[in-house]
Amino acid sequence: MTTASFDSAPTLPQHPVWVYRGFRASDAVEACRSAALEILNGIARGFRKEELATWLDGAYREATRHTHCAGVSHDRHTVGSEVRSIPSQAIEELLARVHEDVLEALRSLRQPDAGVAFAFSALGGGLVVRYLDERGEAVWLPTASMRMRLVDRILSLIAADYLARGDDYTRLSVCARCKHLAFGTPRRGERRPPFEEPCRHHAPSWYATKPACPLTRSAEPSPTMKSRS
Image (cartoon, rainbow, N blue to C red; front, side, top):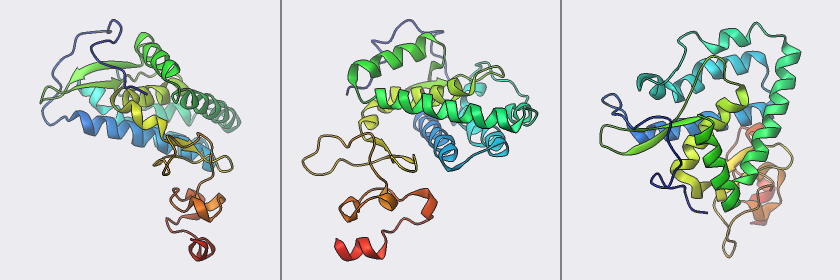
């Protein structure tokens, strides 16, 4: 898969501008990936209303703070406070739907044509905007506003990361049992890992290099796996 080119992208919402001093494109992109994985893996572990509100006012707000400083619409009123006023049952149903929709989008990114379509859709839908850091390095930043849907907030984070590191998404996999997402390394002789494969906690010993399931709170393989490897 080839990362979308800045030069070949569709018409941009606005021209690139200089972002405030101290801003680095690589830091912004890393924050987007970290926040996206945090919410998706959190939902898989059972995130509810309070955890969602904490994420919105924490990791998500941190990932989108560059956009706010660059002058893109970003309400100062915290989104988390709005979430806390919504019934818990409605939040849990929303999280389940969003998780399913985003996983389907991530699955599509493993196909070059679908990946390009995703990038163009994110640009056309205003989920990302292009800026330059103080060194002149181009970066796509996620937009953020009070009325954005949760699925669009997450997809905007993914789009910003994908436009910078699209090839990484050929290595993204989800555990078929616990739904934990992680970027892995292809095994020898394998061009890319399958999208659905077990994490270390739910796999036989020959998956010893896979990321640990977050439910185990351990990065080490089990004693049984060690003895078989």
